[in-house]
Length: 370
Image (cartoon, rainbow, N blue to C red):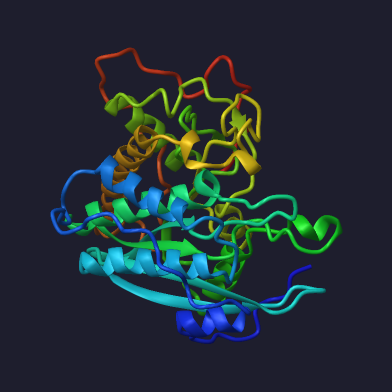
């Protein structure tokens, strides 16, 4: 059982390392160049892949390690280099039978016309296993690299809603102690959801998207049953328009899986979407390369690019749709005390035949209240 975090503290990266018994970080790999790229460009597969290579070269990045500090420093340098505001959110988390865990998240803010927020989350450190050194490239670094490039692209655009991009610490498997507690993970999203609930910051979230395991060379994003149906399907429509249906397949089976969105859903955030491939290197979860085989040689820059361009397209269409709903709610003829329901968006005209929302090869999705 996990207790709520007891205090919030600000620690420098060096103090965090020393507090965890480590030594100052060693020389990090050379970061990808940034000077020739400006905010506002289209999604760059080369930049996203360069960030993934950098994080992979750090090796395992378990909670509190030198490598995790190096990953966080790299992410901050990249974002601040493009003039993006970044802040630390640090929390202590108590879990039964463990020492206090220090979780340090990075939060970047891109102001929009509305203070209501689109929140994009991914982990940046890796889990740990007793049996081997877990590198956590697909499961841990891929979402982090993706979000850096998404942040760069969105920073050059006019946004209808404020976008917060969050790089979470403590999402990976702890791999310490015996028994079921050794599989404990998703602590970072739990601590942040708890904190934002206490601060009253969950109410302003219009959409929350969690990214992980998005660089498999044979990437097939799973349709998560726990995700908000209308917002989830916006990604599949965007993929069809952009010719990326091999990554967001129309015949994707519906699955229920845990990811960073789960904690926010438990705290009452309904508009959540999980973007992840549940089978790394195979058709059946967790896949051939999950665990010890999670390495960059099994990943692909094309997969990062596919998810990146689909994400940016889906965010834009979702933003336009919600802005239209908000304008309707402010008109004199609208009911003053009733917020209009978010409708299931109609399919956009396409050259190809429309793909049915419920593929024949998948079980029917249970109806849920929107």
